[in-house]
Length: 220
Image (tube, rainbow, N blue to C red; front, side, top):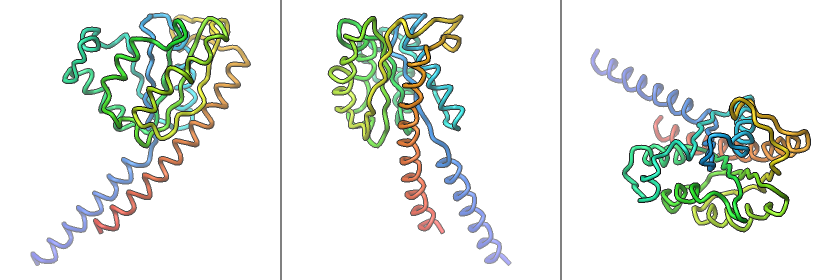
């Protein structure tokens, strides 16, 4: 019975579409972006701890480091560079971003600025962002609010959370960034900030489920 078989195939395709849609929308995705050009980076250590915390809560984390990008692609704003294209796509798919940077002379990393400049105008629309910064003294703390946050706002971030600032003495290097340690006070503040970030990701996931439900009704 060709008609019955076609109906069964049509239903199977709809069910497959439904399963695929649910799977694609069932996990939170975060990009961890390190703005330090150094191989040994305190902000990288903080990012590594933040990423580990998120992964332990079921969040998928993609780690990108400014030092891994071709410097000429950034300096000459090569939007068609494969690395840049992949970066833009990773940000597009993400629910949120962790952005880590050292603070130099009351501002965030210049290398990070060149990378953020390659994002489309509304690249952070609907996304949650948690800035993480390190500096030599508490005097650099306001750099996140007065230098980094305005840049993120121009990219239309839905929610830029209160940043976490760490003094250099609160962060110790290990054999690599994942092996570094944070002091107790910084760890407590970081976990508190990550809780807020996680709740923001959950709100975005719920909104995505609601939108996916509408698509499913149309499909079925």
